[in-house]
Image (cartoon, rainbow, N blue to C red):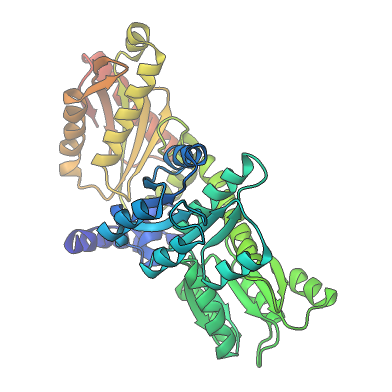
Length: 459
């Protein structure tokens, strides 16, 4: 893993010394920049469900399977849960537990699961302030009451999903009091957030420069040197609200203080002392808002069928690469790839099978090109690739490998087996514009069709 990772890192780094880093928007680059080199190991995608109601258990299982795609183990008693846990407690990243089980009616399951270092979401039909306070004092992830109809399951599933995502979310806590920072860190780390501390505003700004993937900054108001107002203003000079949330906190809770924080660019404000649940709700709402904005931005660039970049992204991002190529910083190769006889495939097998063919070819393309290359669905059954710094002597070999991979691929869908081929046009010669280069590659693709399909034509 280490050697391959370094090779990949080197490839991307070399490319982005020649090109402007701010335009890359790929999951891999974000992972490299944030220090997250791989997702959570597979066996940590398991959820333990301890619930004696078969109806409730079935609803939870279905939603976790369909909505979250997590593996799950289910127990109806303390004894069954204990058997699962004792086999491999490290297997579970969270447990959903009912407080009252047939063989453990007083919430003993919570203590045992926590003892095994498995985070707990309490899901119970009984609510009282005393029980709630007791459970929260044990640092459970959440305390959810089985009331309110089907939406309570929505809330539970969202809590599980959020807790799983928190491990990738960085939060910077800014406070000149080490006691306050430690207290906040403990609360946030119990929710699996990645927490970074700063004891003054200037340090927080430096940390943001080193951790630009930070999701939330939580800052106190009353600090020496640079107070919370000034810090928020300085942060907003580089980090807009759609990229980073800032939550102001203060023991001097007044409407004026809250308004000043918000007017200086804060996303939210909390008065000390606050309920832990309120803090987590505010943080989660702010992070989810950032995620929704990112999703909307991605939808404008991603093809709905194949989940690769679309034509609009090709011209927007590709134009920047083309301008760098014109300045001699990089060289580019443009390939147009078209699935042969697509109309006949749709007529013979149906449009759903045709869609599956397009998706399979898109998957083959993404697997055979580098991360730095742009693979897009140009329209219908056509794809356009912009390859960065590809050796011209090696270009035809790369595309020939792809042509052969498509030809050898048998696509199975809805009980049918389909084989397809592609025709490819490639240009490595610079033109006056990106559009003219794409048209040149497309003209060569048409020539490949005339030559009998399933072949490559280059300039």
